[in-house]
Image (tube, rainbow, N blue to C red; front, side, top):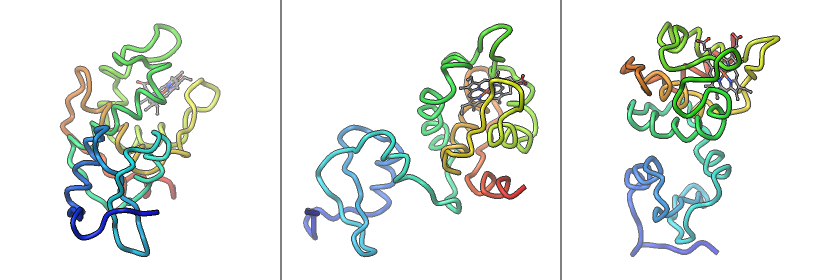
Length: 163
Ligand code: HEC
């Protein structure tokens, strides 16, 4: 079932870099009784990737890696309302480009994305993994004209869930 072995062994670091880049040619990593083994089957579907990336809340990411992951989360979950260009739709969905919430203290933004806003169309995203939420928040804080330079780590999302 699982192929691989000594000849094709790669380091975990390479596999992680590959996962962060998420290119179609990257192999997937399968956990076999605690050992990481590379298979040659190519990437699974997007949702399975998310599940596989979910969820090491203690991993510390670079801003660039989080933002790259977050761009995909945004396209899949947020762009329908807030638009890929972050400008939203007037009188319906606020712009995240230039938003005071997105450019303000991270705690308030994390709270809003985790729990949504009652009596508005903004849903709760707590079903996403800590890593996915950290990634999409980091992306929006550094996309378009937003320039926080900040990485919001998965551990901050985990901590906010308990509040
Ligand atoms: C179904 C439409 C919809 C989707 C999908 C959606 N939002 Fe929202 N979002 C809204 C609405 C409506 C508001 C405004 C709520 C209010 O009235 O304060 C909002 C507000 C926000 C705000 C506050 C902006 C501001 O300046 O007031 C942020 C940040 C935000 N959303 C992030 C996200 C993220 C991140 C995602 C994807 C994970 C997402 N939203 C998906 C509808 C949506």
